[in-house]
Image (tube, rainbow, N blue to C red; front, side, top):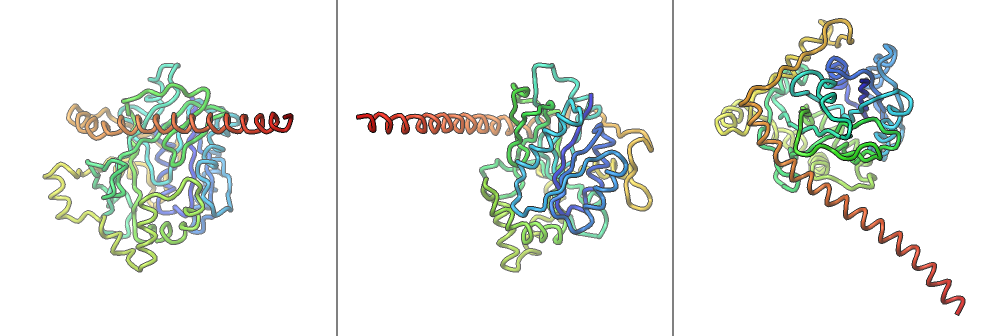
Length: 350
C-alpha cells in the first residue's frame, strides 16, 4: 500500500516541520504540498523535504483561498502521477493518529468495497506561551466539543476523511468529505483515526490568520465560518490578545475541567515528537530510526472516545442530507435550463 498525504500551508513554520515528520514516521510514504504565499520560513521547510525526495511542492500565489480546488488537484495528482492507493488530506495543524498500529494498518482493515474512512477531530487548547514547541505546552485536550451548529465556541466536533486514490475525486471545503466514482460507500459510525487538532497556538499565529488571511476568507465562494469572523473582528478592534486568552486553559481551568470530565491531559503527540526530534530542533527523516508505534487504547479510553465521536453520526446525516439537496437543486436547474429554450423555440414556431 502506498499512502500519500496532501497538505496546504501558508505561514505555518511553527508547526509544519513537526506535522510532516510525524506523518512520515506514522505510515505516510509521500507528501504533496501546496505553498500559498508563505513568508515565514514555511517554504524553506517544504523545500527541505522536497530535496530529500519525500515531497512534491506546488505553489499558489493567489490570495483568494481556493482550498477545495487546490486540495482536489493534489489528491488527483496523488492518484494519477504518484501511484497512491490511499490519500489523506490534512491541514498543517492536524496530526492523524491511528488507534492502534500505523496509519497503513488501519486503512488495510477496510474491505475493498469501501472507499472512505472517517477521522474524528480532537481539539487541543492553547496554554500560556513559554516559547517552546507548541506540543510541549499544548497537552490539554477538550473532551466535550460543541455541535457544529452551536455558537458558543469555535471548538466543534467534525470529521475528516481519508480515501482511496481516485483520479476524479473532489474534496469538500475544509477537507471534511470527498466524492468520487471509486469512493462509495463510506463506512459510517466507525472512526479509527483521531485527528489531533492544534488550531490556536500563539497570538502571533492567530494574528496572521485573523488579519492577513481575511481577504482570502472573504473571497472564498463557500462563505465565512464563525471563527473566521470572530477572529477578524477581534483583530480589527485591537482585542486579539484578549480573544486568544479567552481560549487559554489555565492551571485552574485544567483542574476544574479534569474534575468535570470536560478536559484531559493528553501527552501523546508531545511524546511522539520528542522521539523523532533532533537536538537542533529539527525532525529526523524516516529511516533514521524505527517508525512511531501506536498502542491500542484501553477499554476506558475507547468508551470515552465513542461518546465523543457519537455526535459525528448525526453530522454525517446532515452532510448526506445537504448532498441530496444540492443534487436535487442541480437536477432542477438542468431541467429548467432545458425547458426554457424548448419553450422559446415552440413560441417562435407559432
